[in-house]
Image 1 (tube, rainbow, N blue to C red):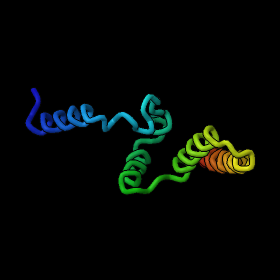
Image 2 (image 1 turned 120 degrees about the horizontal axis):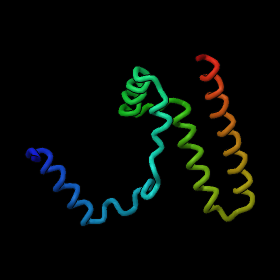
Image 3 (image 1 turned 90 degrees about the horizontal axis):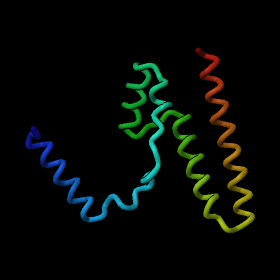
Length: 108
């Protein structure tokens, strides 16, 4: 049985769907990768969620977002010079991410 709060939330979601407010979400149709969060110890996961909810991200999470953004920009880029610069930036970002992950593995 839905309580009044659940009913209000459900009504607003349905209204937003009718108005098309969910039609162009950036992650629409993409599965959410929960493996990273699930692999973290519970205490760290809680801390990361607290930071995330307050606008702060761990370096590796921000780098993953940056990598995805660069891939999307590269996919629609038409200028060869800009593509070369984006590829270089993408590779540097991947290297930074891999370095952070390697450091974390070694600390364990």
